[in-house]
Length: 381
Ligand SMILES: C[S@@+](CC[C@H](N)C(=O)[O-])C[C@H]1O[C@@H](n2cnc3c(N)ncnc32)[C@H](O)[C@@H]1O
Image: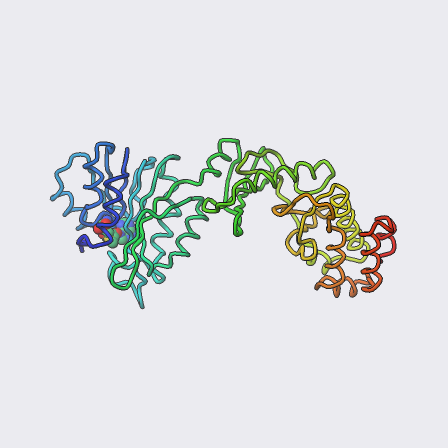
């Protein structure tokens, strides 16, 4: 069944006409509309157009005269030669198929994005480092999910055009390889993988000189400039005092540190014995005190749920909010956490009793510099 060009084809074709370059792969070519648009461009040398349907390929071979284009039957990349393209185009079948697949030109799997997901999982091996993918999706495909898939496959993206047609929005993406991942590769980081992301930051894992590392960068679409460089600057300073994950190298838009193995403090406390927990808590207090003395505030030490990893010793992570302060609150906030969080019950269960009133009094005295940190630590429990 040949897919007659519709609004989606036209919307994608507009971008192909402007952006296709070098060697081009037209995935799921259908009528051959995208391949033809690409081939008409001077900047395009060659086009390989593939489709899973045999009759589509036979039809295109008969109808198309342009010598730049080669047609081949292939289920996604199965029969695509191992080579890297400058441009990859795909207008995938994207509708959810309920209850089962009826039309291969329209339906992309149960949820609609399965073919796109498979395509994106393989596409990076066929794309040059400076290559582009032009991909069309519909708002019926779960745009958020597609963007997650893109990020996880180490791509960055922008929306080139959007059109509302009947009951859906058609969206054309320009997709490129994540620039930070490329830079990391050039720096010698191997096996780079997506790890996780927050509102602003994005984490990768990889191997550097045989050791597991983490790299942190801003999310490609986040506008927050300068934060990464700022965090790297603080961690380097803290590393001198034995605090934080150990930074290996950094640039303005990313930094790389040794991966911190271990579990979060709460989980560690649930599993461990009294002395070990007490030592860990004291060590965190000591690190907080060090930061107080340096006149810097980590912020959020009163809810450090995901910010303390128990390795051989507790390692504080995530210094996104670190800033200079005349009245740093690291110690007092951590005490607040010890007496008011879920950890309080765990500590009690393990025989570590912290008297709430006494703790508050000690914290106040410490804050006013009436007692030393040593005295506070000795009296707390
Ligand atoms: C929505 S049509 C797009 C056709 C054309 N590129 C256009 O823009 O009008 C999707 C095309 O993808 C093809 N297709 C579906 N599953 C495929 C797969 N696994 N591998 C390659 N092509 C596939 C279909 O046969 C169909 O021709």
